[in-house]
Amino acid sequence: MNLARAIHFDESDQMVFHNPARTGEWAVSGGFEFSNWGKGDLNGKARQAFANGWLGLETFGRVTFVATTKVEPAEFDRLVDQLAQHFVDIYGAPDMKSARPVALDELNHMVELCAGHDPNTLLTVAREITDKGVAEAYRTIDPPEAELDILAVHGDLEE
Image: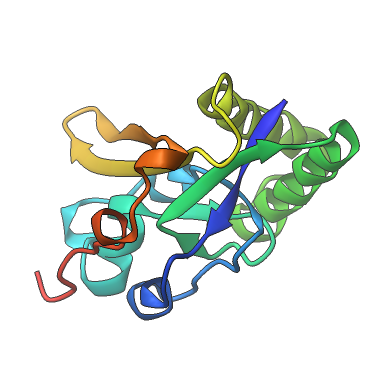
């Protein structure tokens, strides 16, 4: 089974995210963080995190690009528990028993996004607020297509 790890091509994530993820940490979409956001919340670095940030599962920081790679079942189970604990600690889930199925769903969604892709396939996420809530779109970039000059692009923090 495949999952995705944070990858950096330059230092730009250090400048555009309040809390940047570390290179190599496992990542998920993390769109749940924005479920109650409105357009008024989309300013500066928060806007950048919303617009195209994946969520690292160690630092709970954001990263622009992730790359697919194999994950071992024991590591996957550890990540489910780690994310479930985050739901308890940060989002007020009542306990691990309640949080674990939600964390498992989030990680299974990422497994689905990574399924069938060659190792090191890059993924990007783009979010927007719609009348129905937050919408996410995903893009894959095959390893041979991944040139730094087309990838390391970020929005303007002043908009």
